[in-house]
Every structure is written in structure tokens, then in C-alpha cells.
Image (cartoon, rainbow, N blue to C red; front, side):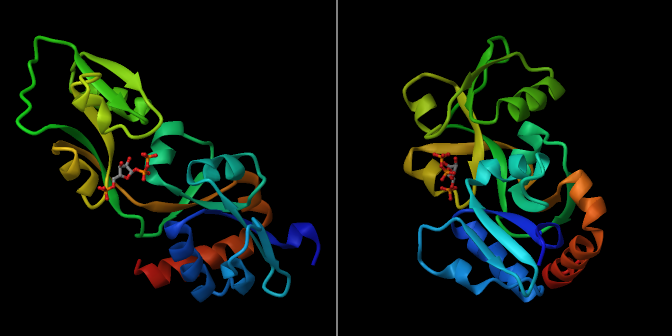
Amino acid sequence: MSCDRMINIALPKGRLGEKVYALFEKAGFPCPQLLENSRKLIFENEEAGVRYFWVKPSDAAIYVERGAADVGVAGKDILLEYEPDVYELADLRTGICRMAVAAPEGFRDDPGRTLKVATKFSHIAREYYRGRGRDIDIIHLNGSIEIAPILGLSDVIVDIVETGTTLRENHLEVIETVMPISARLVANKSGYRFKNEKITELVRAVSELVGK
Ligand code: PRP
């Protein structure tokens, strides 16, 4: 099958990607070699007309925006933070968590002071506090955000909370929910036009499976 007849799919590496692949397989886009325990990152099934790539979860939307993948799966957190120029086609109703503000147990906000906010999601945090008219100072970190308020680097954090275990184990608690998050199926804008039939088929089958 020629390159442009295949649909190229960027999947987030890890547990979420494996769940999403199971969904796509059921939807009629199988590629069983994908689950072989290897270090390979690209897999294709010519017969089904699919090529899958394992990518870093935060990069999936970049592959799609630039057209290296026709479709991909990205968390709503990444889409809101980086605003890639892609079509958001379906909520996959998996990878469910929330974006939240958390602080050390017993924290009391003093509205008279600039609030120090540590986060990987600077844009989301800025927009959230702008909407509330709260003056903040963003401290951009790349991971282990929970440490920041413990060490006095920040007053609060804006981060993903899934089970709440990381917060609990670090004596932090959610003080506000910013928004619910889940994995989304996104498409490259021109790929969506040129491979419309196949992408539409994927969206329809997947949406049916996740109950929409
Ligand atoms: C995310 C998030 C929290 C944790 C929340 O981190 O930043 O640290 O998961 O999950 P929980 O509520 O189930 O404990 P991730 O594993 O993506 O790593 P990183 O933020 O340190 O990069």
C-alpha cells in the first residue's frame, strides 16, 4: 500500500497508549506487532492500512500538527497548554484525571500577596488565575512539581491529579479543580481532508465503542 493510503497514528508511549491501542484494534485498526515487547517505535499493518508510532505523550500533538502523523492521541491538558493547530475529533473517555490547584494541608491564601504557583502548565495556570483576577508569579518546572511548596519554592501547584496518591504522600491537598482532563483523538488539518474516509471511519468506530 502506498504511503499516502496508510493512516499514520501517533500513540502516547505507556499505559495510556496501550489502552488506546486496544480501543483502535477493536475499532478495526489492528497492528498486533505493536504489543511485542521490543524497542521498536514504528509498526505497520499494510493489510489494515495503518502505521503506528510510539511517541512521548507530550509530543503526540506536535507530530500531528506537523503532519508526520495523520491522527494521534493527546491529553486535553497538552491541547490546552500548547494549543496545537489540529482538529479535536473525539473524547476517548480514557486517561481521565483533572487539572487542579493543590497546596500544603491547611494552606490559607492571603489575597493581599502575589500567589507563587509552580507548574508544568504555565499557560493553563496563567489563564485560570487571570479569569479570577488573582495576581500570580509562575514558577515553571518540568516534573516533580509536588516538591515546590514543600521546599517553599511556591505557595501552590497547578498539576494533574489522577488517584491523588502523589499529593497525599507529600501532605498536599486539592484546593480547587481547574478542569477535567481526558485523552482526545486529534487529526492533522490537511490529513483530515485527504484521508477523510479512513479517519471518519476511525472516529465513528471509536466513538461508538466509548459510548457517544
Ligand atoms: C503526574 C502528575 C502527578 C501525578 C498524579 O505525574 O504530575 O505528579 O501524575 O498522579 P496521582 O494523582 O495518581 O498520584 P507524571 O507521572 O506524569 O510525572 P511528572 O509530572 O513528574 O513528569
